[in-house]
Image 1 (spheres, rainbow, N blue to C red):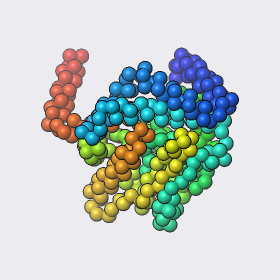
Image 2 (image 1 turned 60 degrees about the vertical axis):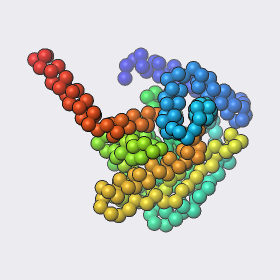
Image 3 (image 1 turned 120 degrees about the vertical axis):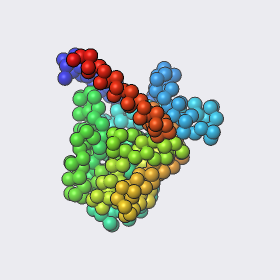
Image 4 (image 1 turned 45 degrees about the horizontal axis):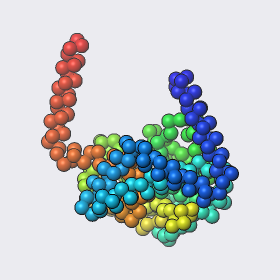
Length: 325
């Protein structure tokens, strides 16, 4: 890591740490109001992410919602994630008992039914609501949890996140090389949560219908469940109307199926997309609309054009290598 990067990371970490210390002075309600205000500000000034969110919302709800509704959802989306970020900044100063008092559970019978079949379960999640609250509550009240996630670029901020999660009983695992560790933890009886709402590597994905449009979808969840005979339980967290409390929602076990292996995984992957879409439709402001979820949509819509582009690209590369020689 370059010296300049370390200095910048340390400065930004100190700024974040200083700002988060304000959460001790004010009440949670005031702190969340500040977060909501920041969400409004970012909606107005962050043109890049606002345009991505609006584009995705128009694409997903094409012919279903008016432009005024789309913009309202986008604004609320910025507010939600800013409020969740402020809640996460406050975690280092909060106790586990406080988190437990802010979160309630619905549909726990689905988790209990799955636990009767296996000592460990795979929790199907998404970039939805305040997942840090959900994971902390789950691990401190139900079972140890492993969370596969992209590591934050700033190592000082990442260490803060790891420390809090450890205190709550959550093991943060780098998604780049954490599969073996996850399998080991599952065999030990610990649970794992995997976010399956974003595209992964093209060779490992499968094109599924999501909001009526075919797009690249991760197959890791049903593949793991099938290989190790572990049940999948969808888990999402939503903010209550008061803006302070949250509800964890457990859904019935996701059926993997036992027909021909590849076909069974593909069918389960589509069911996985269906449940995520169902929850996002019900709470559209809770999902991460800033991500380019349908980036590969045109690849599936016009496969011949994609092949032609790849051939042209390969041809240009060959010519470039020949020139260097």
